[in-house]
Amino acid sequence: MPSGTRLIAAHFVIALCLLGCKSSLPDPAIQDVAGAAARGAPSPPADSPQAVVTASRGKVELSRGASGSWSAVKVGDRLGVRDALRTDTGEADLAVDGVKVRLHEASRLDLKKVDKRAIRTKVRGSLESEVEPTGRLDVEIDDSDATAYSQGGHFFVTSEGRGAIAVAAVTGTVHLISQGKSVDVNKGEVSRIASPAESPSLPAAALRRVLLSVQWPNVKETNRTTVPITGRVEPGSRVFVQGQPVMVEAGGLFRAEVPLKQGKQKIAVVTVDALGRRKQIESTVKRDDSLPVAKVKKKLWQWH
Image (cartoon, rainbow, N blue to C red; front, side):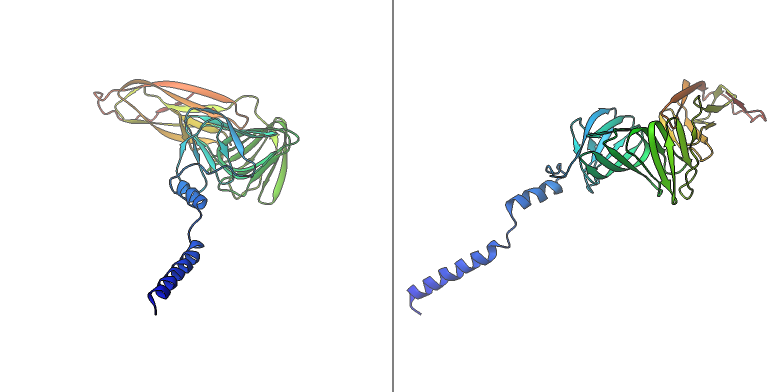
């Protein structure tokens, strides 16, 4: 083949290769999005409605999609489906038009659906919400088939995932569904689910006062590194000992081993009932490692 013909043929082959390979190259925009996702960068703005973080206090973190990574939340952050919030010693407010949600301390919220005036979420811990008549909030309760929803009202949902579930209405009506049974919780009422396998109780008026009874050790000085306490609250309430959440049994009993540091210290027990009301009881104990080992007396406990 003449050299000129070979040169033309070579150019033709190269051109065909370039045309064939061009369609297999990733789009630069796709590369940028994929790279951002791999680096854990925030997702690009979506066309679908999003909820907005309107307030944050204390330690609150945000997780995007299925990334599994958590970062500090900022007021103005926008959340979409599959995003999540979790709180430690803080609280966060989330909103769309007509729906305001507050996630209380030691809780987690996962967004399942977001519309312009509606939110569907799954929660563990404590959630408070105000829903206007034009809005709607659906709350899936973690580790159960229970769902609470409202189309107008101020209400609380409490669940630790292990003990009782409580749904309480401050105003308006909340509809609670579990195990195929539905109840309407009206203003000032509470309905409870003793365990994930049970149906909701008939709504009843909340107690006029917050129930918190604590059984303290009768000794005020000890050489132990921990001290046990037990107590009782209204079923469906949350309990914090020294700021840390403690499991509450379905009947309202709780137990905790409180770590002690050397010297005199206060032990604080706080409960938050189904309507968000708080009560705190304190006692003082002193750890002194120089004390001799004492024998356990029969009368060791006293109720306050």
